Amino acid sequence: MTLRLTVGGRAVTVEVRRENGTYVAAVDGRRHEVDVSRVGASWSLLVGTRSYDVSFAEEPDGVVAVLVDGRRVPVVIESPRRSWYSGWPGAHGGVAPTGPHHVIAPMPGKVVKMLVKPGDAVEPRQGLVVVEAMKMENELRSQWGGTVLEVCVTEGASVETGAVLVIVE
Image (tube, rainbow, N blue to C red; front, side, top):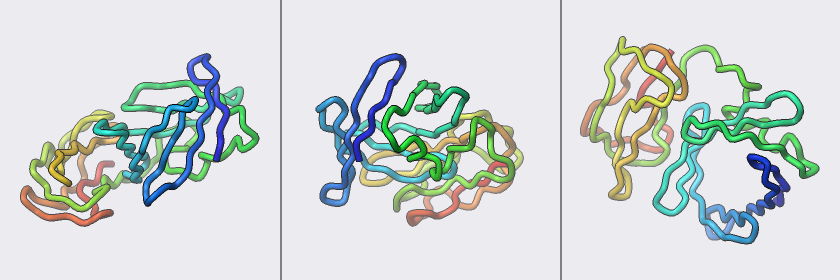
């Protein structure tokens, strides 16, 4: 898939394809291997050794607010496929979803540290749990503010991909 975008006022071409079980994104010809996992209402992107939390919100005038680690990046999709992101979790029209938010394990691993307990108030992007996977520690964060409803795992527990770790409401 090739997308023509305007990102922060700069025109870019992004070409995305699957290659050997991973995604390859070429941004203006620069190649990046990207591991993509759905994490609750957003996406976790691993580019090289750097992890990014990404979600989307449609705004007026064809602008899509791409939230990268909580920072808003305005994007205008110039390509013919304007709604390519609409079915993705986090593409909720700029309004925070209601109801409980399940923080899930993006990959198999071991819970090395719980950062919250039931009843704790959390802010958007606050760390909730640290999971070690492939010798790397990954801090999983809340997508929005709320209260920890339930902690579903304990420190030292092994978890599989998709396991619910924490529920925030």
